[in-house]
Image (cartoon, rainbow, N blue to C red; front, side, top):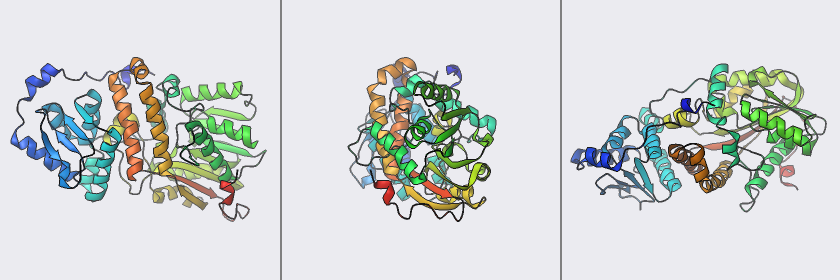
Length: 424
């Protein structure tokens, strides 16, 4: 990728201590009042806020003991929070103009919980949640650029903190003591059991990441998989792994958009791609599945979701995941209703994603120096904020993780109960 075009790289340096001291001066009474007002609008989170004078100007709204403290180190960052709070908090934290004392995850979780409980849906909630950045569209060309933005940072970067199979989606923890590697394998087995894969069947995967699901299904369930992805680096990695592991005759990785899937298959599966499709394209995805699924076919979609159709935050949209959007279950039904698919099972495993992210953040922090050498300090702080914020979002229930199993109508040979999912 071209680092100079990526908004997480080559950002302006944080202000020096001398310039902050020169520009700040004493905190004015109106500024102290405004920070209290902003915290009330945000739902009075259980945090402390100090300004550049070193004094506390907000103490959790008097409702709870602060779980962490936010230090706004200069006047410019203070006023930026009022023009576009979600975007500028992320940028100024990443620049070191805003610091968090205590657990970053606990701090962000307090913000998310307060916003959920105190702010009713509407323009104000959308502004505080999202900000003023327009979401990029997921056209064929736009999707390729959006995926390039996040996934083509380099395999060496992701290899530092993902598991051995490079799985970048929610793992499944049969119990909390299993390793990340074991939990990622358990996720693939959990999905395979839901789909009731049989040797010799054909599977098509939309959005395959680094290819771990296709290899696992071919190796352990005897199926043939064709997997589609538009990330060039991921496809190259996946093809090489399949060649090294002797699976190239059973797994085919296609560098192409899911909208261009061809052929007929017994099974459709998509894990962690729907977030990049965009709600306006769900009916189109349903038509793609209808076109490629056999008369007795079934499928599963695994996706981050949410309870209300709220827009993606400005900072996430601009800096991390352009074009990303987690759907509600109602919105997901646009995929299934048009072709007349039957939804057989819906499972929400959001706390498993929180646990997955805890593993990722721990590994990311362990390689902080390496990441800084690969990119820069802004990038390190931005990705830490992204991972910590994701943990907080799943813990607070702002985000969900849905697995939706579906089939052609009238398919009566699927499992009678869920018991088969939990047998060794």
